Image: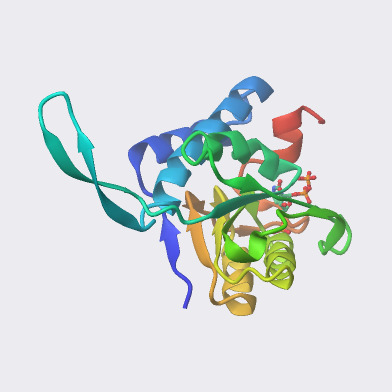
Length: 209
Ligand code: PRP
Ligand code: URA
């Protein structure tokens, strides 16, 4: 069974409040998404395997630890997931990046696929799918399906704000996927927007509204 992890760290909660504020402009919004993604990267990598090494300090030999070298891929769901890539990469610079292009049909709220490019060896990698918003869950469910179809079975989903409906959809259809969130909100409105949420993440990131 996949884990559901809500990151309660005070810095995360503070930055989420700033992100929600309708008076936060595009530049600050983009910076906050990046900072939050770095903080979420810290949590999502918490159980990466380590092995023992020895290094020589200026004083003596030290028995210490290094990452075992598990291969990772970060897969943003376009567009808004793009805003999370740099923040994640600042902590895991050797991760490969895949892209999945989906948009939500405003009438049906179903995801429409328009692009997919994953690293050729993605089936050997642990995949971290990133998207700031988990609303109905349709986009995340589809992204997990695409990544699994490419042969990858170890998937973590990192979102910033989720509705209960989205968590339920992912947990039901991809029960093996670990979900990392900064906040769980009340519900979806009649347009499928998270309440209170932060509005349209893609538009706020890229200044398209
Ligand atoms: C937003 C968001 C998610 C999706 C979440 O993208 O970034 O991908 O909606 O909604 P869901 O859980 O109901 O699928 P959107 O479809 O607005 O596309 P955009 O990022 O290109 O603006
Ligand atoms: N997509 C967004 O960007 N915001 C929402 O609240 C729901 C879907």
